[in-house]
Image 1 (cartoon, rainbow, N blue to C red):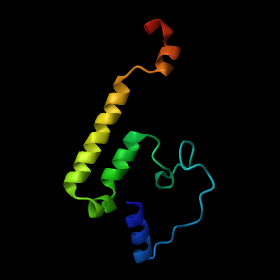
Image 2 (image 1 turned 90 degrees about the vertical axis):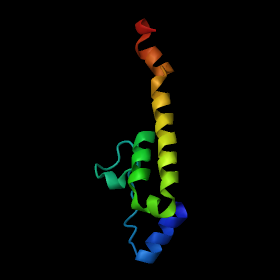
Image 3 (image 1 turned 180 degrees about the vertical axis):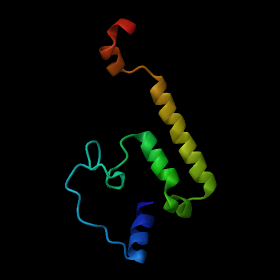
Length: 92
């Protein structure tokens, strides 16, 4: 995907723009196009929505990979983690 994105930029003569000095996650600029996905769910959405994804990979792969990662996200969020145990000790 990285190679395809680089080649797309070269072929289309895309200007990569000025370097971003701010962090590209968390408190990055409000313009979402300048910010990396903050979590796996945003990354799954970005992957599935990117037209280049559908040029590089077959539809079956995109669907299977996005589905697998979505199940991973849901499984992770079904667990009670250490942060929740510390934050809400009377519940656990």
